[in-house]
Length: 205
Length: 205
Image (cartoon, rainbow over all chains, first blue to last red; front, side, top):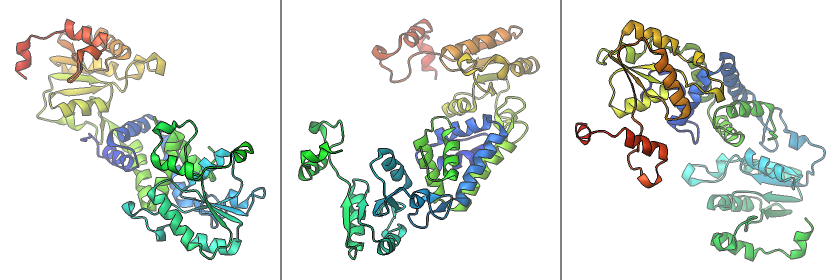
């Protein structure tokens, strides 16, 4: 794309480096910012810089936090007996939105993916093992993506935690609410049959 | 969305203020930037600030430019006899990509839209009238969106240029390449019949 201005080209390049943003969208966003008040653009840039320079990762669970230890780890109303292992902050938000979980989290920072060059050493797995030794929770829930990579990561963590005596569980896989059995993929439908639950249990929810 | 960090919330708010970016996408983009090297984020922020503070609008055509007068207006190989009136820089890029136009442009900075609160005085229309008086081009092409707003803007400019003696033309409307007549909208198909062209003319392209 041949733009009339080097400054414009540079800003478009920067935006189009973000995931899911192509050149055309980047140009649209940049033109929007150009129409804004200079102060607004200043705020925008400052918010990014401040985040990158000042945001901390909770030293316990590696959630993004403004302080050394995040709100969830510091909470007095949450049970410290259960740790839910997730890939990413977005998974914490999704689980919190269900209102079904009141324990702690551990953020891996991704999942094992040879395709993207992410190995176990890039993730917060060793710190999880150490944390489990110290905190000795009653249960560890593996809440990872339902894919080859997710399953690999879950299995790797399961093996790494071989010293751990508590329960290691994995979130249920199966048919989503509203799914037609006819159109469900075979693996999900197969799992939902293998891991069927006593009907009584569903009445307690 | 309840995020664990105020810095994160602030950055997500800023991103989700951009057109077409919701909270979830904003969070994805912000988490991507958090994983980047601190220098990259610095470059990103600087590119935006620099663009907003230093980018100029060409004093002739109002295209975004690094200098007082843009590359297109300064070009010695382009004809100064034709001015193409467009809403926005993106339209210049689109027309330049066709390779069918070698004249100058005039960027309005939008189109008349009561819904969005854009009136004639918000656009570079008076400067177009003055420019036409000085430069006396042979032709003015109105290349605006094929919508009520585009047509209103075109008509407004046509009326404003009543002193102008040259040709005022409007880009052709009709059936796009690959369109099925059966599924074309009635207005476009109607216009393409009313404004039919001698077949001979199409052979010259």
